[in-house]
Length: 304
Ligand code: CP
Image 1: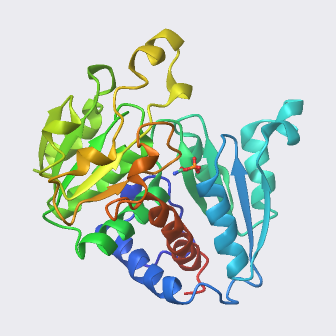
Image 2 (image 1 turned 90 degrees about the vertical axis):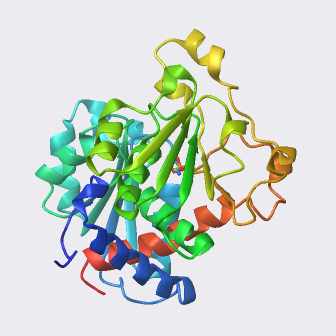
């Protein structure tokens, strides 16, 4: 099925084949990222939560393809501040643009936006729920570093409860027969709904509380930040905020093909002394966001 005019809210909105179609096209944008194919198109970026990589890589992707950007990156500058409803805001902006990219702190807000918008909507992160475009760039990066997506041992470390990038990537990797290793404080374990999905897809997973228990056996170490903004009780955050700090000496005797990914931003869960290791791949991962988002938008806008 064509991706033209489709919204992407959950990673499961696209089949495995459709996800692979995006990744394949992204490879061609990696080779040739400047093209004039979005000349007639206007993309609206609505970010009701802070962002560096997602918003700016979307905007860079559109700019390099000759399109125009309109947007909101500060909620106080829109008429929501005057009491306008979210529904009216989305309906209005969909009349000004060909595609809406939205990040919002509430789970379900991107789905709601896609239902009231007259143009496709891409979810750039909705609360603790999903971050499907991050997943596509994570898959692209895993394939780039490992030469394959299947039969890998993948460890996820940190905030697995609220980590939306973890939820959507785990769901996508269930298509590829990977073995999952989940490392988290007990308070931040992977939600049952995601575990249910893994079991339903007959994949294997194991749970741990220490990085040391997994680091030597995995191909991908996907670090995540303990997200202060998701805690209602600041004392709880203070208790567990430094649960994991990856240091360069911990990489000794790890697999040669191990690559460390992180959706970023990091706070202190990866020490800067790791950055010079060949196994550190998080900055390249963020760069891949431009190519993958170029591919995704080109397909949804029907120019590829
Ligand atoms: N990975 C990610 O979503 O980063 P930003 O919050 O900077 O967009």
